Image (cartoon, rainbow, N blue to C red; front, side, top):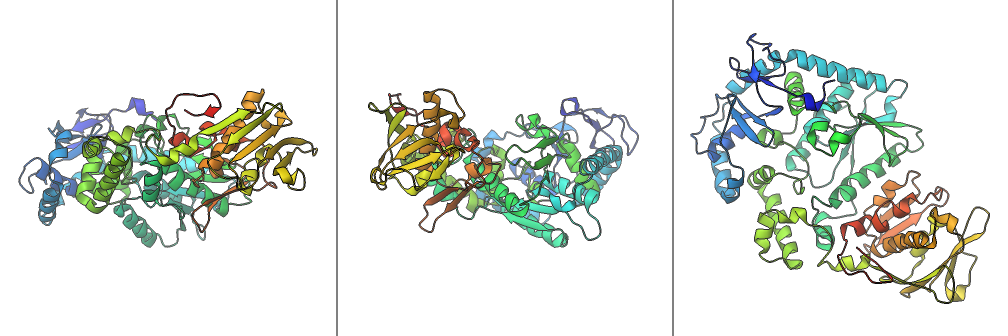
Length: 558
C-alpha cells in the first residue's frame, strides 16, 4: 500500500475530475498535478455555497466542485475564494431560510454524470485498494470464528466503508459479523437517522448499541466544565467506557476477539501513529484491525461512489467529518453548518458554553465562546468540584511509615474497596474501636492498615510492606495511597478505571441517589496496581480538574 506522505492527485481538464493516476482512465488525457487529497462536494453543499458567495440559485449546478485540505474549494480545478472566518458574521437564520427555498430547485443531473466519470477514471485505484483491504481482512482472521469479531461502527464514512469490506470478506450463509454502535448520545441527528437506515437496509446484520445510560452530558458540563481540545473527557465517559463495558459483556469468556476500526493515518497527527494491526492495551484479548488505515479521503469517497452503498447524509450538507455536534475539535466550518442545519442543538450548546464562562468568571462570556477560546480551556479553576482533587496529608510523628489524611468525604466502606489492589481485605482483623481495616498479601501477612471511623473525615494509613505497592521508597508508596484517596474523593463514575482493568475486576455503577459505587472483585483482581496510577494522580477526572495553586507541604496538587 502507498503511504500518506506519497499522496499526489491529478486533474483532468477534459472530464473535470480528480485522478489518482497521471493519465485519465475515462478519456485518456494526461492530467496536471492537483492537490494531495480531496472530498466530494454534493449538490446540497453547492446550494449553500451559492448563498454564501452571493451567486444565483443553480449557478454551480453544472460545475465540478471539490474540497481539499484546509477547507479549500476548487471549481473546475481552480481554487475558489471563500473566507471561512467571515462566516462568523453571517445570519444563520437567513441563510437557512434561503437554503430551504433554493434546495427545492436543486438539480443533480450534472453531478451524477461527473461521479460516473470519476468512478470510471479511477477504476484501477478502486480495484487496488478494495482488493488489498479484502485480502488483509481475510488473512488476518484465518482460524478465528466470525462470532469472535465485531465492527466498531460510528455512522461515519470510514466505519461505513470498513463495515462493507468486512461483510464482503467475512459474511456468508448463516453468519454475519456483529456491529457495535458507540451511541454517545451526542451524535448529529443525521447520524441517528443513518444508523436506523443502515439497520433497515441490512436486516440480517446484528447491530448492538453501547451507551452510558447513567450520565448526562449537560449535567457533567455543569460540574466539570465542557470538554476541550486539551481534555476531551466526553470520549472516556460517553464512548470508550461504554463500548469497553459492552465488549466485556458480549465476549465474556472469549480467549481472543477481533475489532475492526475505520481509523486512517491521514485524519490527524495522533492517528498517524496507529498501527494497522495492534493489540488493545486496555483489553488484552482484543486484536484491533484497521483495514483502511492508509486510505485518503479520495479513496474513501471513490469506494462509496463506486459501490453505491448508503452513507450519512451529513456529508451531503458539507461536513468533512461526522462525530459529536459538541466536539471541541470541530472546525469553524463544521460549527457554522451546525448553526444552519441543527440550530436547536447548536444554540443549546452555545448557551451552555456561555453559562459556563460566566460561572467561572470569564469577562465578555459571549466573546469568549464566539472566538472558540473555550476549546483551549484546561483545569478546574473556578469549579467547586475541583476542590475535591486536593489530597491533604501529614506524616505521623508517632509511627514510622504512617500518614494522616484529611478527607473531603466522610469514611465509608467504599474507601476499603480502593485499597484492595494492594492486598486482600480482611474484615475480621483490626481494632474495631479504632475503625481499622486490614489488608494482607498472599501469605496472610498484613501489608497495610487503614484507620478511620466511618462518618469522620480523617483517616490514617499505616504501611507494613512496601513491596505490595510495586514501587521503591516510602514517598512513592505514599503517592500510590494519594491516588486512591483522590479516587475516593472525586469519583463520579466516568468508568475510566473500569476500562483500564484488563481482568474486569472493577465495577463502577451509579446508585439510585446518584452517588457512585466503586467495587473491586478480589476474585478477579491480580494486585497489578495498574488501575491505581494509570491516570495522573490516580483519577481521570483529577487530570481534567487540575488546579493551579502554590505547593504546600502535605498537599498533593497541580
